Length: 240
Image 1 (spheres, helix red, strand yellow):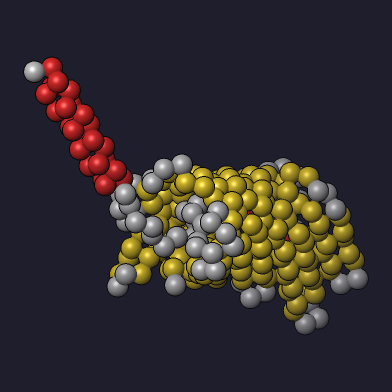
Image 2 (spheres, rainbow, N blue to C red; image 1 turned 45 degrees about the horizontal axis):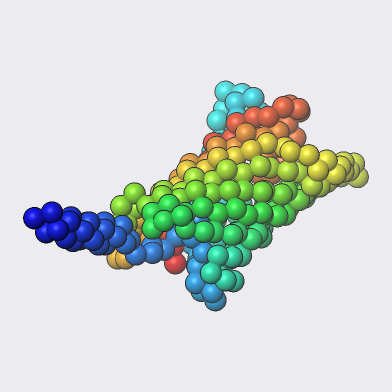
């Protein structure tokens, strides 16, 4: 009787383990923010829009929400390593980012990654006989992400970034300002949901909270505050 009970318990244990494994076996989904590397040689891309709102300290009663075209392109280099690139543009100003990520799955639902991105931005605003200014700079974004698959098709990614200014130069007419701070300018925290939308197309929808002393999208406002301000962003994109 004891032997039969032991055999039954062992069989039940293996059956439960098999069911649990099958229940956790979630197929990989298309992603841009979720910390999972593409297969070596595989490309991933998305096109969308980023909306950034000005802090009240800069524009006072007027809150300006500025959209920017947002293009992401990624390529797998190895099982865990992949390269990322991103272009944000508003015609008069643009930002190009290149970086590397190392991603590792902790289990079928939970994934982690660490990375480092270098961003170069440039802006020019010229009005004949009235205004002639331009600026450009370099920013470094060390980052870490955690991703969790909530369901078969829905996945959540959370990314934390440090913002380190490397270089800044602006010029109005013949007057130029240049500095190389290489100091931590602020931090950002991003929450993104990725899921199917229509006709097997996947989308990203997220919020990014930027707390920094400078934001490249508002260089032409020449704000005089020497302190960190809050810049909320809304992210939306279609994966191609």
